[in-house]
Length: 266
Image 1: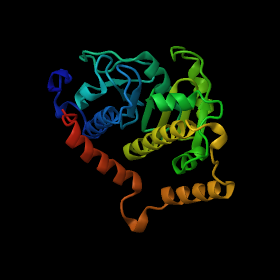
Image 2: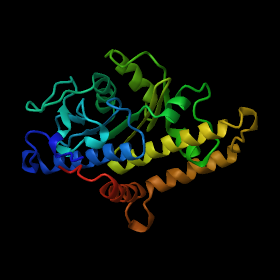
Image 3: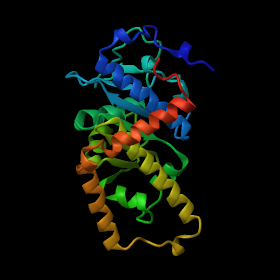
């Protein structure tokens, strides 16, 4: 099915600054990748991108489109008060998405992109009393920067934002208890790579626990510490001056979405 009919009424690249258009194209590609990987949930869940500039505006998915239908021009621009700034947009937004994403964008300048999903495995781990266990290599790289936020109901209450941000702190990964997964990044590649790792770690844990908790092998503490050191060094120092790992991840991801679900750049 063609996605052109879902484009914003002013679907012209020259209607946006070059920096905003780049953010829109990347975010639309991120949405389609989420659909490809099965992280979407009909009209629920969200990925957001901060619009470059001093205004603290951000982009969110239009309520009414599936992830696979989202284009760069159909994304909705809002401010931290929830006002829709695209006055000729045909769509509104999911209010719970505004509550969660506005809280983090306001509190974390490094949160240029934020992904929040309700995947089956991610939600299962969020509801597990022990949370994410140190039982696989992906989890070991995540746990040092993983936070938890207790469930308070559907995210419609603005006062939850303060507690959400306090629980997140400086972490880059968040499990919203009984709810789902969240990851953020200062670049699109960092955010995509992190949510991919978190979702994959959750899936691995669910499969591992299927054999019974008593048979689970927890990684040795020395190995856990070594993985933390190794991951930290990789993030701080790109190899031999070449592109950093998150950038390489995103370039590869874009090639995949171009093959499997093109049309996001409209």
